[in-house]
Length: 134
Image 1 (cartoon, helix red, strand yellow):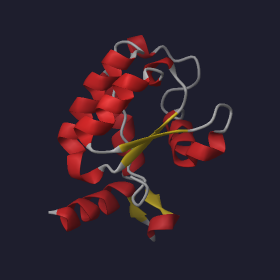
Image 2 (cartoon, one colour):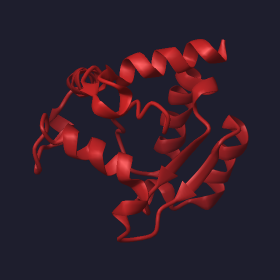
Image 3 (cartoon, helix red, strand yellow):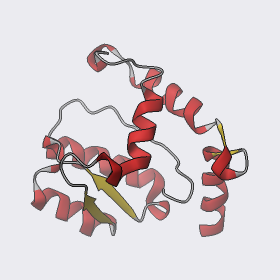
Image 4 (cartoon, helix red, strand yellow):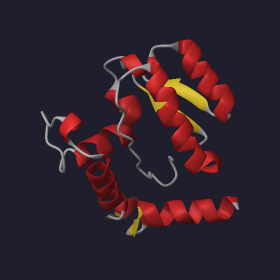
């Protein structure tokens, strides 16, 4: 969601490719027309290239991989992870954190006005982009 920088996070029960596929299916059912690509790091949930390929085909999106130790290749992701850490500091145990708590933090982040959007929120810009696609 490069144009809007809209941020979304889904809590996964396990960090593996099967769980990632289920999460992506849920995500894409909500945002199908809005997603053109995703950028991954080399986490264990992204390693199975066959599973990632099936996501690309099923969702009609392109999956890009950032190089190891190259956070500059996923700048928006790094910024949003930093913002999420305002709500969940390092060493937070996400197994004790509810999905509702995470979604509330994400909503707060998306509702912040951003200079890059002429002091409109990411949520505002995202809804505007969705309306263009309808």
